[in-house]
Amino acid sequence: MNNHVTPFLRPQPVRSAPEPEFLARRMQGYYRDRVQNTWDGGHIMRGRCPGDDALHLSSNDYLSLARHPEILRATAECLMNNGNGLLMSGIFLHGSNPLLDLEARLANFMQAPAGVLCQSGFAANTGLVQSIADENTPVYIDMMAHMSLWEGIRSAGARAVPFHHNDIGHLERQILKNGCGVVMVDSVYSTNGSVCPLPDLVATGSRHGCVLVVDESHSLGTHGRQGEGMVAELGLCDKVHFRTASLAKAFAGRAGFIACSESFSEYFKFESNPAIFSSTLLPHEVAGLEATLAVIRREHWRRRELHAKSAHLRRELDALGYNLNGSQSQIIALESGTERQTIVLRDALEARGIFGSVFCAPATPKNRAMIRLSINCTLSPEELERIIDVCADIREDVALSSWASTRRKNAQDAETMPQVAVA
Ligand SMILES: Cc1ncc(COP(=O)(O)O)c(C=O)c1O
Image (cartoon, rainbow, N blue to C red; front, top):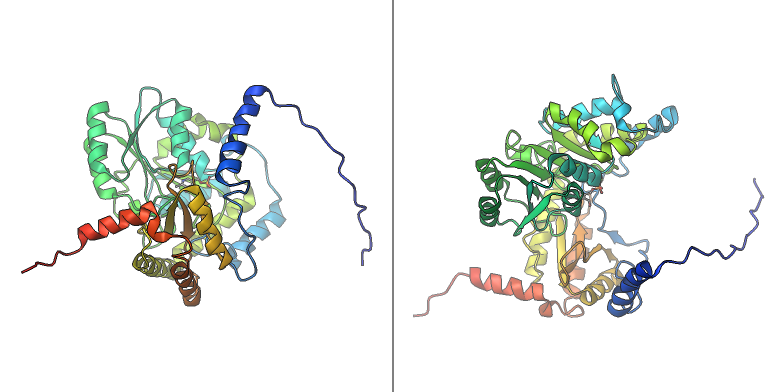
């Protein structure tokens, strides 16, 4: 036994360089306006620490693959055999290589001619937009599209032309006003789980000769017969120019992917800044993703269970009076509205062992904050009932009936209620 005890070292006080006035003022804004005035000195993201019986609904591991033995074994064996491999930008890779093989296999899986692995979904989106748009390109973007697509527009110096969420009529009016450009959407929206009306969107974008980009981060692996995504499921692959995805959701790894044409994949690797100026994936990450792809293609039951459980939970929460903002997927959000109301909701859920993710500005518009519940395929019937029971029990504590989202739901429900004729 090793009885060696590391002596406790009292940390020496260290000082950082004093911030100049402009930076200090900017930081004070955060500490004063958000931490002090809105969160009463606490933090909206930091509630209780989860106990042993906590139900974690904050992970996007929808297919419950993070601890899959086959994937862990492939990752561990590769790490032991190869260490961290060559630490370099992907532009130096060529010839026969596991990363290039995985790119080809992922592209084939998504029914695309080619594809590029990126360090993350964020790098895929920013790199893509930066390499297809410039200051002369109008980029039509759904107002709820992921921040990485907006960041891509910013870094490209392109012109963002937002359209109302899932409003294809508004998109078309914007195209008629501003001309041909790039159209960007998410297939499943990460904040509230709503789904893009892809057939209409694709028809409209194609009619006007636009380049189409669909972020499939929340549908790759979960949608389609083998998990090939929603664009492929709907037979739209030959109309959508680019599909991007974070592989940190259903693929439970850390990478991003762009499905594209053969010529674009080469162009992207030598033209996009994240591809050139940031190191590529490590060998064990590639080996893990290769094993994950095989599991995702094969284990259909995971998708079946995920969709059945998500639909059950959506039905039950809707019946309890929660406005799910059109969720049609495994992402289910309870929109509490203000940040103060969100802290009340967070505490009520966490006190009963339910841990979701807090979403607030800048991930949502101001006063449209929410707690997002990410469903996974291995939740047991008892765990699902526990979520439903807790959501039923807390309604008064969190003043559900007073939320703006509840009033919107009630108004919508009243509009769609069949009218009873009065004699
Ligand atoms: C729709 C969407 N696109 C892109 C990303 C970024 O992915 P990553 O976490 O791999 O950078 C996310 C993750 O939050 C996402 O939800």
